[in-house]
Image 1 (cartoon, rainbow, N blue to C red):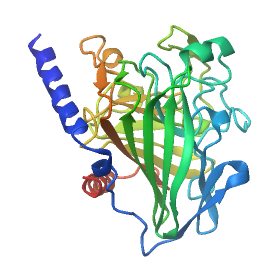
Image 2 (spheres, rainbow, N blue to C red):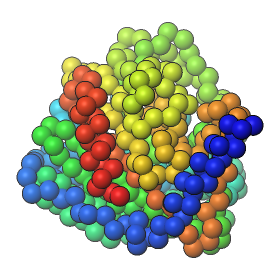
Image 3 (cartoon, one colour):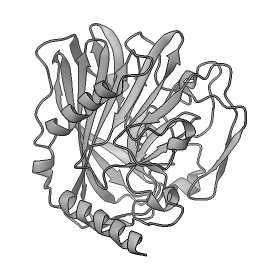
Image 4 (tube, helix red, strand yellow):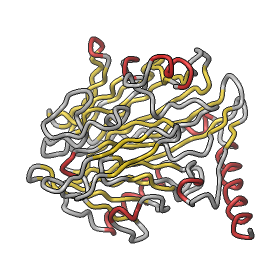
Length: 362
């Protein structure tokens, strides 16, 4: 009981810090467009409803904002060597890919329980009647800013989190910084959510929040099928990977493999080989984020996710976080993704990138 009380106090302290930040403060972020390094060019491809990001003439990723996706995603994402980091299915399938979890596409940020509505698990694979009553959608509003430059580029967007009945629950403003450091690619995502229509409750669930669905070559080797159950009790069975899977996880706290699931860490490194190219993919949490260091919803079958609100599942019921954002108040999430052509990015380099990230967005 004493442990629970201490944990709850820590959570509420984090809430006070987060809620006291206004949208203006949260978005007063230095433009990360550099003056050296490979040129990062952003182009608004209006006909395709996407912003294409190119590094030195080679595709890096695209910000896809068609409402048909039910949320905005970065897709596909390429390594410096030109290989797909993200799974292709269900948008553009590639041979041998798993076809589980159709809502897991590219890189995204949403959540599975927002005033009781599921934004995480929404896809057109869901029966229409269920989508119309239980699933939320993030609608694109506008592009505020596009900047290209040597060493980096910036994209600022506005979105709206809408219930299945059409009312806005959250207004979103997101800044993406696309940064180059030699052959290393970095994506900083800074997202501020503001409760507009009423107070908004983020119910405790493992279905969230900032995530990447990655290439099958980076899956963790497995000889056994696994069955996963979502918050609504729906079961999904994932077939085993062994022949092509080369991936492994290691956290800032030294936890490795499938054991990283449900643990807390400042950063997590997924590393392996994609068609002959060594790759490390690191996601960094930020000290000013809610309940830092975060829980990790990181699975060997291809899901690499950060979830600061899923304590109940991650602690086997010892702690529950049901966080309410008051009407008119804002909460900001800051995440860094590092994509390095390295078999296993050294810990000191990861810590350098993480420290730089922490200082940059204070």
